Image (cartoon, rainbow, N blue to C red; front, side):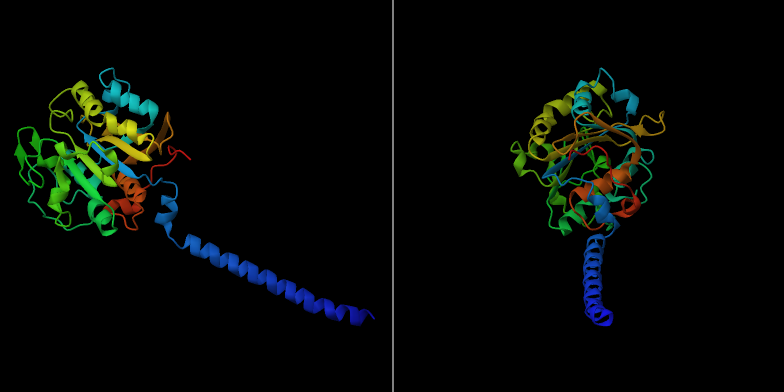
Length: 300
């Protein structure tokens, strides 16, 4: 009797073990598919996907000259209502190589502020990656003489702060004047840069002048971004050469936890990677490939 009762139990046990093995195999396969998206996508899962991102680059001021300064009430209001990176750094000096680093993950061999030959590089960059992925891109350049103009300088305009002109894979037509910045913010590209002129960006004029320019020209967008799943990033190219290249970087908008801050160390390459990941891009330009996403500031 014991043999006859044990006999049917074994097939049931085998069937149970087979079912368990099948379940485990399916689970492992599912996990494999999920993790198979790669390290960049896993990291990107911690980054939001805003409908619009606007990045503004200001000039030549250290963290301590802006954050907490009575001369920059608007930037500090963005910090209070958004997120503050307390250990954000430029890559080098002078200005122009930092712009190339932020835009393409490399200084592209640029070492000074001399006017570059338009389209001298075919390297990957934020705009070329976004365009290839079917995303929309534009830059808005204050005092640019006309849309797509590759002139080196004109009044308070300086090409050295517009790295997109250095790349043959970025259509010059996507470089617009700041007068073309839309008043209907829903028509903005999914990712864009704003370059104030040499006075408005604090290069030739005061911190107060630049702060007021930001409030008057991008305050409307910032307010709108707070309720329209959009993001404003205000950063600087480099410091005043006296603070180890520590710069202000503030993020503001609905995807950001108000009043948050991060003391993690980030630089232009990390910001570029984060911008790429907000666009869901599968590639990362230059040193952004080994950089770190900005985390710890995003709203759930």
